[in-house]
View 1 (cartoon, rainbow, N blue to C red):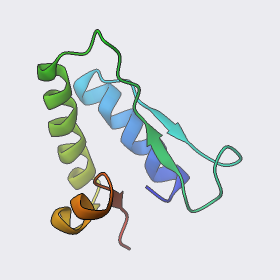
View 2 (cartoon, rainbow, N blue to C red):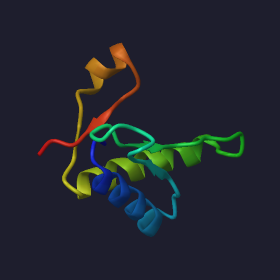
View 3 (cartoon, rainbow, N blue to C red):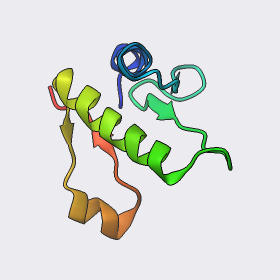
Length: 86
């Protein structure tokens, strides 16, 4: 995410709108400017739940004005990353 306030806002929206609990990881755990979301999957989480999470993340991400990075480029290098573009 790259911003503590946005990471917290994303987590709050996911909980309020979709009843999905995700933690934001902020300074001092990570360096300022590298704030991110912690998603902890367990054997309890079924494919349908993961699909719901992905859809919810997309909606919340876009609702607060963030954009998705180029998916094809990211898939070649690493998992999809989402970044804030001011």
